Image (cartoon, rainbow, N blue to C red; front, side, top):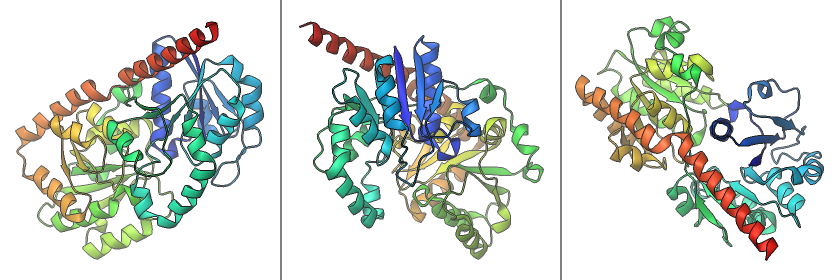
Length: 392
C-alpha cells in the first residue's frame, strides 16, 4: 500500500506525534509498504533530513492554526497517487484541508487525534475549550465524521473522547501505538549521557523525559522530590525536555524554595545516544501527567528496562501496573510523592524484577509492529470494501 501521512510538523521538539509517526513509517517499511509524509514544515528545515520516509514539505504555515496556502492544491493534485491518507492531530489546518481536498474522491482518510479530544483540556482551559467548541461545530466535527476511521491509541482515549464535544459521530478504531528500538537505541550506553554530565556519576537518577508543559505535572514531581530529598541525599532529578512555554523559571523558583535547586539538572531536549543514554543511566522514570493519551516516552523507558512512576491520567497506566512494570498514583502532590516513596522503599532485588517486567510489558503491549499491522489491516480492509462497492 501507498500511504500518505498529513501532519503539521515532524520537528521532534513537538514530542509524541512526530516520534510516533517516525516509528510507524519504519515499521510499515519493514513490512513492505511505503509511507510518505506531507508536512507543513518548510523544505529547508533541518529536521526533515533525518526523517526515515519521503517527506513533501509545503510550508510555510502561518499562526497557531497552521494555515499553509500550498497544502490543499498539493493534495488535490496528488491524492490519486495514494491508497489512503492519515491525518495527525486536530484543531489545525491539515484536517480541514484534507477533508476539503478529498471531497468526491475515492481515497479514504483516517485521523489520529493524539489525545486532543481528552476532557482534561476542557476543565483546564475553559476559554480555549469554548473557542474549540465553536470550531468543532463549524468544521472539526465534520472532519472526524467524514473520516473512514478515527484512530485512538488506547481504548481509554476513545472512551474519554466521546465525552468532550457534541455532536460526536465517528467510526472509532482502537489502533494501539508503540515503538521499536533502532540501532542507536540498542547501542547507546549510560556513559553516552554521563560523559555530558559527569557530575551525575554515582547518583541515583530520577528521570523526567518530556516537554516542560503544565499538563506534564513536573511541578508535582519537583514538590514530591523536595519533600523526600533530605532523606535520600544521593537522589538526583534529571529534567530532559524542551521548555516550549517558558515554564522553567517558575519551576526553578519552586526548586529553590524547596532547597533542591542544586539537585536538579536541566538538560533541555535530548536526542539520539544522549537520550537513550539518559534512559539507561536512570534508576526510574517519572511522568505524573494530568493528561496523556499514550506517552511514547513511557514506552521508550519500558523498552530499555526502566521502571516507571505514572499518574493515573496516563492512559496506559493500568497496563503498566498490571504488568508489574511501574507504580501508579493520582495526579497530585500526594499521589506523586506516594509512588516515589514506594519506589525508594523497594529492595534492589524488587527494583530489578520491576525492570525485567518493564521489558516484558514493552514487548507484549507497546512494540510498534503490532500497531502497524493493525493499521495496515484496517486500511486494506477499507480499500477492499470500497473496491467491492464500486464493482457492485
